[in-house]
Length: 519
Ligand SMILES: Cc1cc2nc3c(=O)[nH]c(=O)nc-3n(C[C@H](O)[C@H](O)[C@H](O)COP(=O)(O)OP(=O)(O)OC[C@H]3O[C@@H](n4cnc5c(N)ncnc54)[C@H](O)[C@@H]3O)c2cc1C
Image (tube, rainbow, N blue to C red; front, side, top):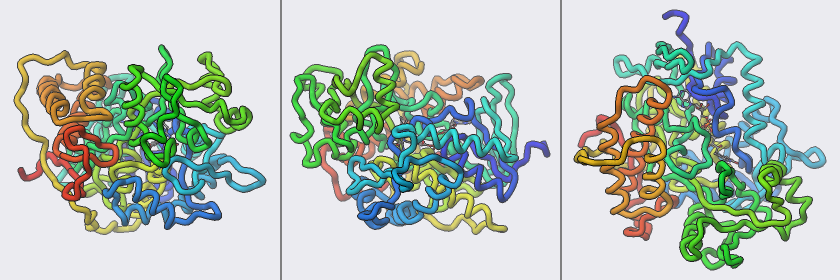
């Protein structure tokens, strides 16, 4: 058991997990558990880039204002202040680690994305930012004494006398389960994008950290806010592939299947409106034209700009028979980013001593009801660094600092078990979530989903292998998303209900769930 002790155990090897590991190794022993290979994660798919106010017409204050505006009344202002003011320091760390951000004449080049007032997105390899970050950080990790266990799935958080003391993990190759103990357990397991039939997310992103934390007694917040990316390639037989926001930032135009440019009909900002507005407008246009897609048009842009600014997208489409400099790109929305997660304070601490969360798993409150594009890689580094700062002091202060935002805290409601439900499997779960808890929701669709999910939960067999752990974590996350969406009787940010289409002042508060909340 002694050999299984580490100062830090980090679950996950995306940007949050690897960046924390690289900072934490200066302060103690570090184990990274990751359930696939080191680079199986969402981070490597990030295209657009990472937001930081460094342009001559920009400032942290302006970045703060844009982030607050996108969050639709629910951002934690203190968190956003930290995010925007500490951005430059953390992105400088990435440069120091060797991430090759794109430059022109020795200066970092910045692009603009939807709902940012000015160009402020740093990118690498044009539209391959995440891949460069992941490759660079994992190379750095390999050159340190950080221990990385691949194909190792964290299966339970161990709590003793109210403090987190470690975790158990399944070796996915042998099926054996091992106990690991630590001073600090950091969940960096990403979001839960595999909940939905159409998703941009990697196979590994199944809400594990959120489910583990909930079962251990942690507070889970803002789960109703799931961001759907408006423009994901919709080519028959081709896996979901993101067409970055930056394509619209550079002048890409959305047209319905009849060729009409429709975004000016819905929003003054047209193609540069926030993601929820663009995603819903696309859904309305698809319904209106009886089609499962719309088109993104970049044929009017200089082809050299398209091929050099978006080489990754250009190559991917060309390899699937589409030259985007000449033809329209078929797109439709898909699940993309979870704003909610394990509720943490501004030092990444959850409500159980010893437990931290960072990256997409965490709910720091900086995204509110809707994330501003390119703020999630930034959130991952800014709040990860603060985790290490908090844990690095000789005796970390007691968990003191709570977020001051207004919240309703409740436990998951019990629901009647239905006599007959479709069999529980991944495709059925993903279709249910897409159809009933997706971009456009209603009380009726949410109630139907809630009953089926509760019934599935009651039928879950004991987990033994990776798929069975994942489905049980997904069902729990699906319940958290659905029950929060049912409770929130309004529309705000990424959460839209046809029976409550307006944003209401009384709902300017968060919903959080806790296993042991007082009913
Ligand atoms: C296609 C795409 C494009 C994007 N583009 C951008 C962008 O341009 N800018 C931006 O800011 N954001 C972007 N995002 C969002 C951003 O990439 C993610 O929010 C961010 O990378 C999350 O990093 P992370 O470290 O929290 O999680 P991830 O990178 O998803 O890593 C999660 C890790 O946890 C591991 N894991 C999960 N469960 C377990 C378990 N039980 N045990 C062990 N390991 C586990 C996984 O294997 C993985 O290593 C994009 C996302 C996608 C999907």
